[in-house]
Amino acid sequence: MFDNLTQRLTSTLKNLRGAGRLTETNIKDTLREVRMALLEADVALPVVRAFIDQIKERAVGQEVLDSLTPGQALIKVVHEELIELMGKANSELNLAAQPPAVVLMAGLQGAGKTTSVAKLSRWLRERTKKSVLVVSTDIYRPAAIEQLKTLAKEVEVEFFPSTTEQQPAAIAAAALDYARKHHIDVVIVDTAGRLHIDEAMMEEIKQVHAAVNPIETLFVVDSMTGQDAAKTAKAFGDALPLTGVVLTKTDGDARGGAALSVRHITGKPIKFLGVGEKSDALEPFHPDRLASRILDMGDVLSLVEEVERKVDHKQAQKLATKLKKGKGFDLLDFRDQLQQLKNLGGIGSLMDKLPGMGQIPEAAKKQINDGEFVKLEAIINSMTPGERSQPLLIKGSRKKRIAAGSGTQIQDVNRLLKQFNQMQKMMKKMKGGGMAKMMRQMKGKMPTGLPF
Image (cartoon, helix red, strand yellow):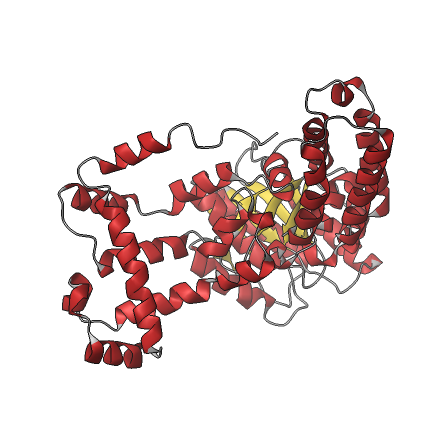
C-alpha cells in the first residue's frame, strides 16, 4: 500500500532535507510535486486542496523558516498534516455497552464485508477475549449465509443460523435475543450488499439498524476503488449513523487514495485495515504509523507488536538456550526460522514496516519474494534427519536426490547451503554471551526516533 505515493513523496522531499534555507520558489515547486503525487494516488481533489493549503500556511510561517534545518522542518510539517488528515490517533472499537454489544457491518457488494466480519470476530476473540456471535442478514446473495457459517467455524466463533425466507430485520433481532440469553459479549451483523447504492437497500439496512440498535456501525469499503470509496462512504454516512470505516484489500492497493480521503470526506475514522486474505489479516488503523510509512520512515512499533504476538517465544527461547550451551545451529533450526518469518506475514510484510524501503529499486524488491522461502523449506523437507543435523554430509549424489525430491535444481540446493553457512557463522558469534557483545558493538549506531 502507498508504494507509488511513497516513492514520489520521498524523492520530492529528499531534495529539501539538506536545504540551508527555504524560499517561496522551492516551497512552491515542492508543493506542486506533492500535489501531483497525491492526485496520482487517487486522493480526492477537495482533500488534496485542503492538505496543500494547510502545509503552505505552515511552511511560510516562522515554525519552518526560522528552523536550523528548514528542509527537515517542512518534512515534519508534511508528516504532521498527514496524521491530521487521517485522524490524529487510533480510533478504537467502542464496546462499552451492556452486553451484547452489537456491531453492524454495511457496504457495497464485493467490498469484503463477510470476510471482514470473520476477521473482526477473530480479532475480538484473540485480542480482547470476547465471546462473539456472527449472523448474516444477506438473503439475496447465493450462499452468503453458508459462507459466513464456514468462516465462523474457521475463526472459532459462534454462528447464528438464518434462511433466505426470513426478513433481515427479524434475523438480526432473533440473533440479538439469542446472544442475550446465552450471555455473549459481541454480536456482529453481516448485512446484504448491492452493486450500487439504491433506495431499497438503504431502507432495508435502516430497518436492520433499528432492530438491533448497534453501538458500532462500520462501513466496509474496498480501498482499490480509490475516490469512489470516499463517495460511497459519504452516501452510507448520510443514511446511517456510521461510527467508523473498515478499509479492505489494502495489500493490493499501491495508491492509497481511499485511506487519505475517507476521513476528510465522511468525518468518520478508519478503524481497521484489511491487509490480506487470511483471517488474521486485520490491523487497527494508526494514522501516525501510516503517515510514517508513507514518508518511508517505517513502522517499527507495529513490527514489534507483530513479533510479540506471532513469534513462538518458546521455540525462540529453546534456540537461544541451545546456542548458549554451544550446540550447533543446524538446518532444522534454519527451517524453524523460515517458518517464524512466514508467521509474520512473509518478507514483504516486514519490508513494508522498515524505514528506507522506498529507496530500494523495484527490481531489487521483486527479487526478495516469499516464493524463495517456500522453495528453501521444500529443499530442507526433502533431506533426511541426519542431513538436517549434519549438513556437511550433503555432497554430490545427495544434492541430486534432494533437488529431485523438492522439485528444484542442484544450484538451488547449493544456494541454500551457502545461505545456511552464512547464518551458521552469525549464530556462532552468539555462543556464550556473544549476543550481548554484538549488541554492545551496535550500541550508538542504531537510529532513534523519526529521522527529522
